[in-house]
Amino acid sequence: MADLVIRNIGQIVTGDLAQPLADGDTLVIRGGRIAAIGHAAAVDASGIERVVDANGADVWPGLIDSHTHPVLGDFTPRQLMINFIESGLHGGVTRIISAGEVHLPGRPRDPLGTRALAIVAAKSWAAHRPGGVKVLGGSVILEPGLVEADFDELQRGGVRVVGEVGLSGIYRPADARPMVEWAQARGMVVMMHIGGASIPGSNGLGAAEALAIGPDIASHTNGGPTAAPLRDIERLIAESTMAIEVVQAGNTRRVGEIARLVARAGALGRMIIGTDTPSGTGVIPLGVLRTMAWVASLGDIDPALVVALATGNTARIYGLDEGRIACGAAADCIIADAPVGSEARDARATLALGDTPAVAAVVIDGVVRIAGSRNTPAPQRRAGIPWMAAAGH
Image 1 (spheres, rainbow, N blue to C red):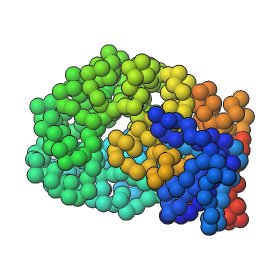
Image 2: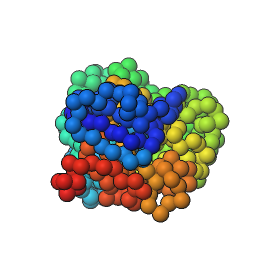
Image 3: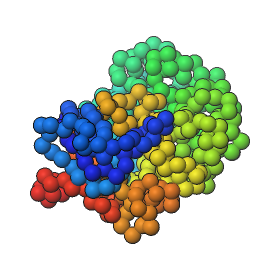
């Protein structure tokens, strides 16, 4: 946790759909939390030695990848890659949500092994932050034989999420609905696979199954990788209150179609953005930023609102204390700008064009984790971070 001032901000984008932009050019962070937002002359920054100069670039909340498949440690056996989570930090991601540790080699499928894996992963990720990135991990995959008492043990073990229903032997409504209700009664957030099969052993599922099972999140509605029919997505929007998730590892055209449907229904508060990686599509460190650009440019959604879909919306659904630029929230934020060579002049206009913004700096709990990104193009306006420049960053 740290104290920090970010000054000379071009625009503060809050991550809050109700008030997407904040007035001011200065952010004050104390003890790892946002203490003040406003103009430099009107906020109290006394006693804080470390000052970041945003140099006119935007400040956004740190991006939250709503759909990932980590295993244990910053390694993916799915793609035989290490440090993929830390690499996502360079794409502005400060938090990832596990949709299930399904790629673990030899993943147990009996009730005891299923419980054990979820609890071990939840405890491991609670104590391990690759590059500083926060991981909500240990998402239990429903398997035959689980009983209600198992969900008490999972809750005691720190498990907060049910991974994608449909990735295992539990996918029929008669089997899944009781388990989903047991989990939700214990405060767990339940994801459900929507669309065609994604990996061997998974199942194609649509609106009829989702409405019968009742998850909290309709996962990767644009496909992971194969999208559900648009009529199914229309049903989910109209006949449920489920979150509607779109991802990078899916159908690009369908992202724009879904965004327009959600906006017309007045349901942007239900839309969230993830990557659904690592997967057969690969590891995509800029996946959240790229999907945001699809939503803004193909769905004609105001870029400031798109930021909320990738931050505050997901934080609210999962009960996280970040995802917003608001007093009292965890100080996870990024400095974002138009990249060098772009016709855009700020990060929001970059999204509207369908391009990927540049990440100038990333802050987690008030600590500057990176100054400049190794994965995005350079920003038009570089952030001034003197102590990191002196250290050779």
